[in-house]
Amino acid sequence: MDEWEKGNKISLINKTIMKSIKSKFSQLVGKNKDKQKQEDNSEIITNAQEWLEKNYPENGTCQIRNESKFVNNLGKTREEITELDISAKGLKGTLDLSDFKNLEELTCYNNCLTNLNVNNCWKLKKIECSNNQLTTLNMSNLEELEKLWGYNNYLVHIIYPSNPEKITELDIRNNHLSLSLQPNYF
Image (cartoon, rainbow, N blue to C red; front, side):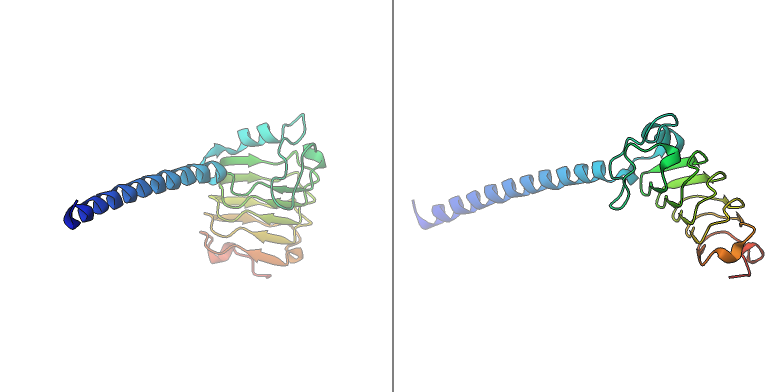
């Protein structure tokens, strides 16, 4: 075999190897994307109330182990839960948390929630509901509320508690509130 034939054979082998590497790489990238979609619940849109009923049954106990790094409500009833982290779960629509009577901290950012019912959650001190699609937020019963992060929603109306001076942290930027609806006591 002369040098020219050896060169062509080596070139052909290199092309075959490169093609094989590219194919394996594409398969690997595709598997990683599929795995990421499975792990990232925010890509899956789910009815919020149905999801709540499945994972926090009204007449049962929490079915989720370690819903976040810092929160584990497994085995607790709705009434026993004081902290709830359901952020980035791909939840849409109305979320009624009125059965969570002892809830003190609610984290539900990065979903597609359009309505949030916390009417009976009198102990709530902190709400993180940013990056949703909320238009109204009724906090009239939340006398203990200290922190509200509700930025990046579609809020046009907020009903504050009767003692709004207790709220020490408020972030409601990037909403559709008129200046007359924003509190002037902060």
